Length: 218
Image 1 (cartoon, one colour):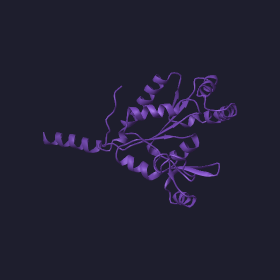
Image 2 (cartoon, one colour; image 1 turned 135 degrees about the vertical axis):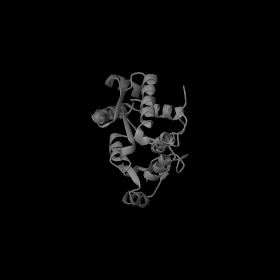
Image 3 (tube, rainbow, N blue to C red; image 1 turned 30 degrees about the vertical axis):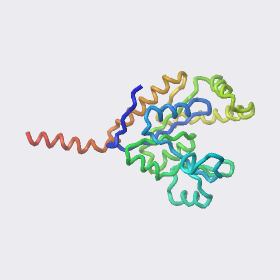
Image 4 (cartoon, rainbow, N blue to C red; image 1 turned 60 degrees about the vertical axis):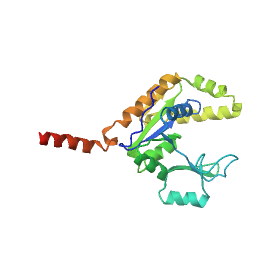
């Protein structure tokens, strides 16, 4: 499998991956970052306390409630949500830094977070992809195959899946994950094509200017 070279002459993009639990987005995200190590995985900020073994800036940016709400008020968050009494969100600064370096940032988030990012100041740099399971029966089989969750947890995930799937049409691309290798190949093709869009290659204006100067010098 060929690995792409990092291209610092283009502006990085924001790649959003969403899916119901069990459809395969986390596996696809891991494969994508293994294929191109220059891709930056978005680290969320949270107000919850660190767990044993977690480090600030690695698993999460751990912030106090006042710090987090201050970031929201200051426009420093691309998206945020409150979950079971704690805030979670995506800080804007590290994403902008990566964009300037020509690095893409990968977001493994739900449709609500994706919607907020698409409506943010960086929305024009977003490429959003929704991953669907081949069937609901297969989705449940994959969740049970993990052997990680109780029947009650699986039932809860399945109940939530219908709502999540209803937002598929809000995304730029939709992939049905019937076979992982094939889905991953399609995901790579989407990213490679989006990287080549004219508006993501700011160096092209200077290059074409140089071509015109060559014409004039003939």
